[in-house]
Amino acid sequence: MSVPHPKDLQVSALRTRLTGALPQMMNAALEPFDDESVWWQPADGVNPIGVLALHCAGNLRHFIGRHVGGTDYVRNRPQEFDSSRRLTKSEISTEFSRAISDVRAVMDSLKPEDYAAPSRDPEGRHWTVYEDFVNATVHLALHVGQAVQLAKLRGYKLSDRVWGEAHAASGASRV
Image (cartoon, rainbow, N blue to C red; front, side, top):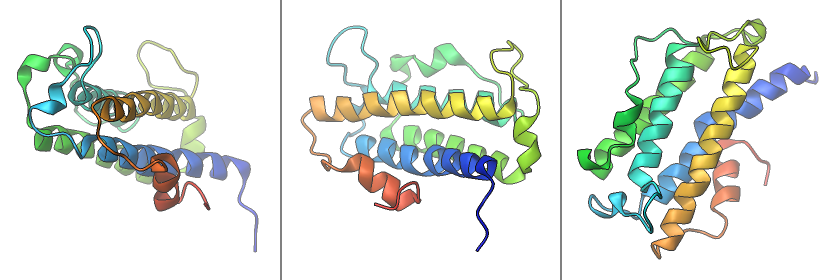
């Protein structure tokens, strides 16, 4: 049995988290909310879970879909934070799922050497495409953690092992 190259392992780790474990955790956090409570805020200045999911979707479709994958997605960042839109939970879930599908398609289209290519971020915040994916993963993880906390603050019961279960189900963990 051959041992995978460390770069292949790094990309695999990003893929299982970005398209598997983290989306599963966001969906677990979102699941107990309904069309009204998805816009609940525990305090002023705290984004509701609906905003978090839409913001993550916009971020992924912009930075990975458009800048890495070349899709025609045009981001409207202020709209991601506009709670007055009152999308349904199903519409929010659909937008989030579409973003994850876009990320999966981009990752499927890349060859290992593509990750070392210069970042296509027009603002030049990253050196390589690989860094674009690391940044997207960290950003998603931050907001997934906030979504899980919102569900818990709302009093919804999530598994105590939501992190471990999502990682195991996605192949990101052997636990």
